[in-house]
Image (tube, rainbow, N blue to C red; front, side):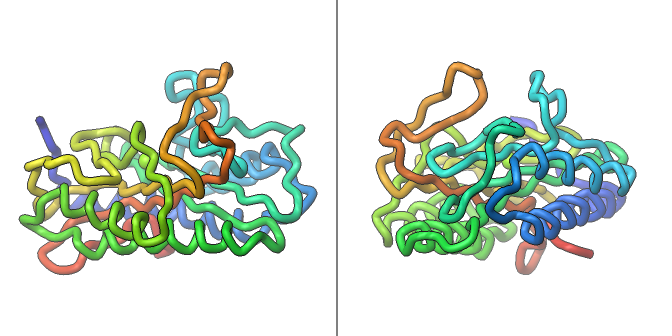
Amino acid sequence: MSVHKKSREELKLMREAGNIVALVHQEMKRIIEPGISTKDLDEAAFKIIKANKAVPTFLGYHGFPASICASLNHEVVHGIPNEKCILKEGDIISIDVGATYRGLVGDGAWTYPVGNISDECKMLLETTEKALMAAIAVMKDNVLLDDVSGAVEDVANSKGLGIVRQYGGHGVGREMHEEPFVFNYRVGNKFVIKNGMTIAIEPMLNLGGDDVHTLEDDWTVVTNDGRPSAHFEHTIHVTDGDAEILTKLL
Ligand code: MG
């Protein structure tokens, strides 16, 4: 497996890319409300990415037609923005966005409540965010990647949530998807994370069971049981001390 450790210059550009991802999420949080369409969200994201002299990483990636993935309720990931998809009170909407700045990628996702949501959806969002933060907290030089995966699994299990098995985190940098792949549960992986690596951690947790499938549009991944799913992601830089979150405002 070839894993590319980042130089100081690359890290500087990844902080810029991460800042643009965070600016998009800041705007999503501000404008998400009942009545807005996921197409409107996509257009807002595109404008922010372009205004910051970056490229929407997702647009055209394997033919993906938008700058964000917008996955509603039982949609897990890779939902395609659509003017007919209008958010309504009680929905949850997962927004995943990538920005490429001077060749380096930032990748981050967040699930937002639309108005007031049910207590079980609140728990799902809180727990998935907590799983992300627990995983980030164990990311240090010389730690087994499997322990990062295990941190997500333990938080999910503490609330009896389903864990999506087919998708996970990944190295990120000059490419959106680099080695290593990061499972959201223990697999006995012996990979050791090292100072200088940049990795996207992205738990996808379900209120119901683990199982998901892809719709006929060949993109949208949904839960088999139709229950809601949440997705939180940050791009992380492994350092000697605490891991650095790159997808945050500078
Ligand atoms: Mg990702």
